[in-house]
Length: 291
Image (cartoon, rainbow, N blue to C red; front, side):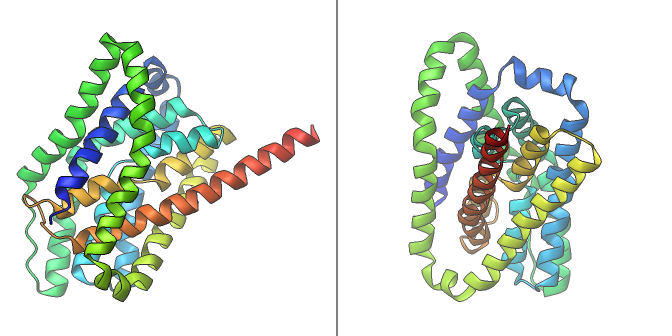
């Protein structure tokens, strides 16, 4: 069974929810806090792929996992980052803005970066890796941009209905991702067991280094703690569902194995970021108690 038929509806729902979450605050964030948006995009679009490439190169990952890890890093921020930013007392409007902008920008940056990386990996391994850039762009527009646009239009004309739909679908999103992960684990259990250590290390390094570097960039930008936490979470959480959709799509790579780094990344991402949120909330609670 090709899991693309499971991941596609999940991805469409997530992007539709993101469209519903967009409001005036999201757009005014670009005008009111342009430096934070630019720095967030720098971390998302430039920094993450470089970190992923360096990790894959250093650990000498096999070509399929090399491509899979970089693919995760090239994807936009995950919609769950908005919820995590809220839990961490971050700037939710900024988080939604960063997720939305990265979802649009990566429509174009992802094919460019992945085509460049595929040529390098092909040269290193001697294995020809072809990337149908046109099909990738079309698939991303259909699965990412169109559902997000429909969600925004739906909220504009039917705000009350959109609010109800958002609450219902929002509760279904995470369980759906876990079902997707379970299906992959069952289908590729042997490959996961054989490579879990190296893929686990790769994904953990990607998440931790992304969070560390984005925190340093935020400090250099002299942002307040609220914005710093938001950028750390946004850069640390990727849209793993999109990476899985691209890797397993019969129109693009048609490789379940290439999707494995994204599956393991998704699981570790939630564990690590939940831990981060817990630490932040404990710190904020202690600070409030002392005051």
